[in-house]
Image (cartoon, rainbow, N blue to C red; front, side, top):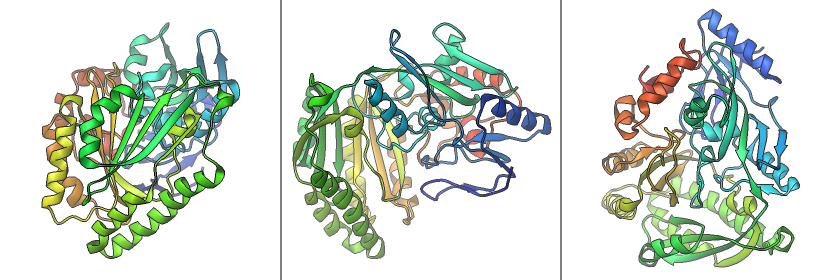
Length: 436
């Protein structure tokens, strides 16, 4: 064990753990938890740091996930796949592709570990299950007392129900079992649209396409809309963009050029509206088809800070319009687009889409930009609309704010008392959002 600093991807959060280890087995995780409990300290298994909050920040012992990777079981009869919890989503996607299988939906950052992505409620858009946690069929975790507990539809069902979005507060996940589907092809249609046209046709697009994602460029009327439709094409029949086209759109324009524009905007905020007009026109319309995971995920090389709230679907577009009104009435200069996605209701107690269809509104700034005025100016509006903050993205909510938003909040606290009575997995973020 050695000492080192921990820092998240955006650079917003850091910590100085006293001990660092990279367990390669469940037994090693059990040993670390028991030692922490006996010493009256705490332990956290961090992922890749893609959460913008300090949800994974270690106080004493940091466990790195690198030794807990890989697919361990495939059940083609049950259509489930089990992988170790430190497996990055991109590695699972490639392994599933080789098996002729796929997740139903996923978020767009492929570097996340499976444990980190599910524990914070990472979601995609549309489909019948937007969140990764809603696709879980089972899990294994080490509790705060050092017990190895398995949960599925056959055993410890109550734990599975609650722990699918566990915030890292219930135990250290060691493996996760996902419902999977046969590998499928998605037809993608990406196009620039105006604000009015996009909002006027949004409900129609959501009804017609399986997955819809919109990006509005503040200080302009420019939108980019992505519609993805599942097809009956054989996985060998897809028509992906050429290497040159993919490099041009996904690397040069979306990362290199966009990153350069953000740096210019950070140095000269007065240029941001003009920059956004350029950025809004830079991406051209295109259609292509490819395997689902190649469409759903995208490279993110421009670092940023993000706040995202899930608001009730029926008021979502009105909330978006009000956010635009507030932005335009302010002196903020917002260089990143606002992302708009939808999710169907699910039954995961601390999922941001628990019990209701949701519209997600995500606000970003470059990593070197002070986000507080922008995020702080919009957050009251989002909360007043019944919004629930993404657990892994910037927000100021505490337990007193969050408990009324989740009708099973007390059930989660009771499960935490049962699985981690000594708060071996606690840190300042969890004490704030859970209250104990």
